[in-house]
Amino acid sequence: MSAAFIFYGLITIKLVMAIGVAVVYLRFFNTAAGLKQMTPLDIIVNFLLSAILSDFILDKHISILDFVVVVLIYGMLLYILNRVTFNTDLGRRIFIGSPRIIIQNGEIDEEEMSRLHISAHDLALALRRQQIKSIKDVEMAQIEPNGDFTIVRKGAKKYSIVIIDNGNIDEVALAKIHRSETWLRRELQKRKINDIDEILVAQWHNNRLQIVKKKDQI
Image (cartoon, rainbow, N blue to C red):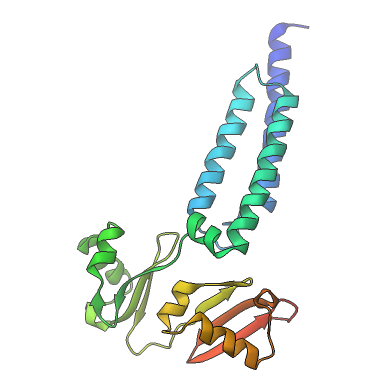
């Protein structure tokens, strides 16, 4: 058996294993698959996965056993990271981020635009894409964690704001509706909800608090 046949046979086995790992990752760990958006966390995870797979395929000194061990460690760390990210407010802020308001009631927040490195041309382009001719026609505009613009016209139907996500209070969202955590907990007690972890999602819409518990049917 020639050395070339053994070499390319090993490469084939590595490619099959790499494809298998990539499929498992995309099926079970890729958080952007459902919403079709990329968060900073997704970019980091995809970059690391690409590095692991490419090194495994091309570096003949990395054995299959080494690859399996690295993938197991990577999967365990990714599982912990996802739990921290989607089950704690701090994790979400660090790895995903929060929406940032740049226009409120037709007034531009210049400091926020400067922090986000958004120019007047960027803002004008986003408005033109929404067929909006004047900033004064904008009720609210914000930058989502994935970089998209969300723009609400004046007179449009009020948009809902998620203030509890999977048992985690979004303090930024509370500030948007000019409410406090004390107010929120008092409202929950009125509905005989003592543990925020019971809540899958709570949103503020049309000046009303709407709650879906984790055991409820949506």
